[in-house]
Length: 74
Image (cartoon, rainbow, N blue to C red):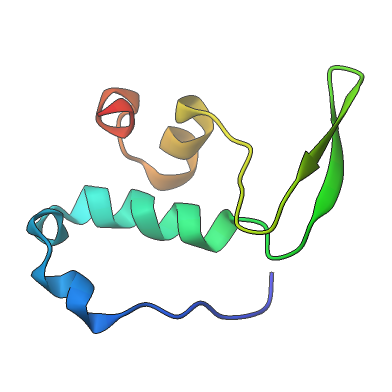
């Protein structure tokens, strides 16, 4: 994927910023959110994914980031 995202520096002041796994998952979600509307097929059903949305699961996020599923859930 090409492109960029903009992140405000004030996020460094958030309480969760010190938890590197939390930040890692958050960045992963930002990187993988759709940047345009698109149609996807899931189990034979067409679903429209709008800009900014993401279709995923805790298991996939865990596999891609290395963060345990239980922490992704929380």
